[in-house]
Amino acid sequence: MSLMAFVSINVNAQTVSFIADPVCVNKDYEAADPTEVVKIETTEFTAIAAGLANITGYVWEFGDTQATSTTSRVEHKYAKAGTYLAKVTVNYNNGSSSISSAQKEVKVLAPPQVVFNFGNDDVYSACQGGSPIELTSTIESGISVLWSTGATGPTLNLTDRNLGVNSQKEVGAVAYTQDMCWVKSPNAKVIVYSAPTVSAVADYSTINLEGDPSSTVIHANTDDMNGVTYKWFPADGLDRDDVWDPTFDPTAEGTFIFRVTATKTVGTGEKCASNADVRITVAAPQGDFSTPINANNIVIPNSTYNGWWSITQASWYDGGEFFVYNKWGQEVYHRKNVYQGDNNVWDARTENGEILPEDAYYYVIKNDEITHTGCISVLHVK
Image (cartoon, rainbow, N blue to C red; front, side):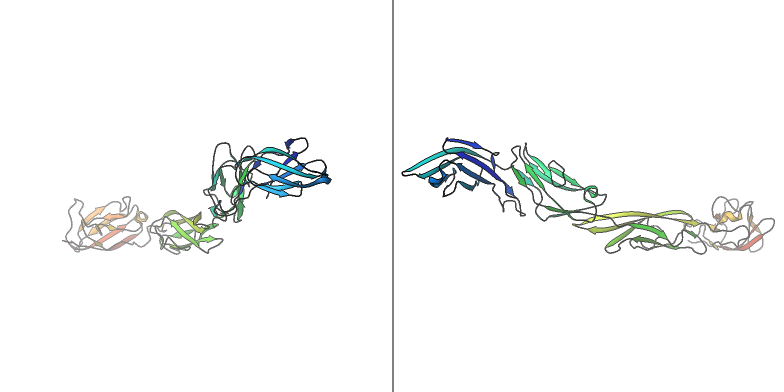
């Protein structure tokens, strides 16, 4: 855009009047380096003189250069700010040569001193819901900045609320003084990317600690899988935590909630991410006193491993009386209730706390209707 100021000079009356604001020297930044392109506002000078039929020419002096013209209207560009004396001399030929002249000071204002901290064709990107894109300018006191979005001030923050998503836009600004001398910024390209849309589901929302199904595949479903990475938390019980479809194989009953984070790298390296949760219930095995006993058959006293004879789901046998006999049929241990709050039942000791010798032993667990029997081997490890 080229602006023009107008200066009118009345030659006969020797008076000069301005019919526009003072002239501005303006820079139109059209390259990454703002100093590469400088656009100077044009000033149009008009001489108003009587006796037009007898005028043979005009000599214009602008205070920085001189020009000869046959017309009363000329254009001139001032290269830098300052105060210049503009003068026009009119030559007449009305039987005898004569001249008339007039002059006036022309004030050329400097453009605002501003640095836009972005360049032409620079691309700025952000993630929806994340930190905003920030475009900044460094200005002196008395300078205003108007952005193409309508916002004002030296800094512009852009989010999906004022840009939308997945649509690139160009954003620029104009810095101007109170005298309306202006500097135009480069146009930055800005875009806010949407994060992947993710949901999480399991093949089975309820599985069994023992029985079928005892495991399940969980899936992260995204609207676009290209370039998307996955991370599951917590990773306990999963065969992998960095794939879209890990398998969950539990070791305990309860309710488990897994969160997957789907991340996609976009634009200038921003990582747009979204989360989804899936809930899985692991049911305890179902049984009662009649269920066959599942227990280890070796006890190693005082050992970290196999230091106890333990029954899986010992609570099923709550109320059952517990006996241990040696190979001669002698009772070496007895307890009224086999279940004492956990699955650990017997540590190969007598009721007095003495460790039994290494040998094979025979147990009985019974209530009024059902009796369970089996063998337990006691080993001593030195």
